[in-house]
Length: 264
Ligand SMILES: NC(=O)c1ccc[n+]([C@@H]2O[C@H](COP(=O)([O-])OP(=O)(O)OC[C@H]3O[C@@H](n4cnc5c(N)ncnc54)[C@H](OP(=O)(O)O)[C@@H]3O)[C@@H](O)[C@H]2O)c1
Image (cartoon, rainbow, N blue to C red; front, top):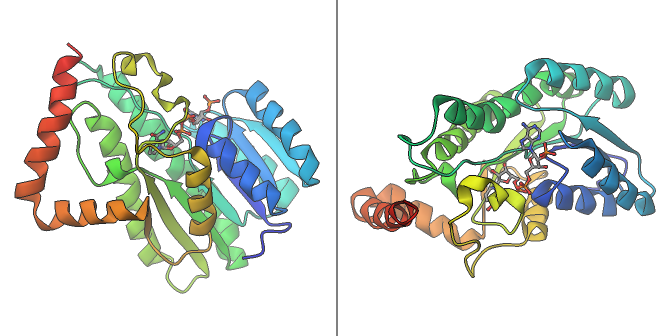
């Protein structure tokens, strides 16, 4: 796809994968709408994007608040009349067992990671349907395929994202609108700065750069696939889990549980 003058909205654009995705789209001449809670960070990125001579917009928004999403969506549609690519990337995790986490901590992950995506889709899908074009990219995780001890509620939010996307993909058949989930393994970003990850080993040797994931998001925005797992070799692990769950699940569960127990 030629991204020149296409309108791309990215949530969670103030850091990590979202920030890198904004840069990659801008390099190709797309107009970029940057959404997150930290306006100062978004403005710094907007300044960095000036050299690409594109149109940019910064919008402060907590994606878990449906009124805020509805308010900024109106502002975007007044200026751009439609969005060509919607990247639902805002998300976070709180590490800890279900018995340690409060109900509010569990709810907050679902509200941001899952409902935040739903709110953006509900606000931008009508204009995409009217135009009969557009692509939604939802940033999930391999945690959308594995329920892991220590991040059960994060996994639930990403499973929900994948399930919603799969159902919606069927509904969108023949409308000209696509939807693709990008599911990376561990990525070197500020994601693990949350205090709950304090005692965790930071990054594995196989962890990805946010640029690698940003490139996968660009690929996803023209893809007919439901899910792009990054790196693609991990598709094998997901296949193994679904095909031989009784063999694979105990191995994965044991290794993550060991890590969770060592935190205590
Ligand atoms: N890093 C990994 O290992 C990894 C692996 C797989 C998937 N992912 C997924 O990748 C996505 C991006 O994460 P990242 O790794 O780039 O982490 P990051 O550097 O911490 O970035 C997270 C982004 O989400 C935004 N955000 C969080 N809560 C928000 C809210 N309520 N409203 C609006 N924006 C919010 C943050 O902006 P503000 O704080 O400014 O609001 C920030 O821009 C997440 O969905 C994450 O689940 C990450």
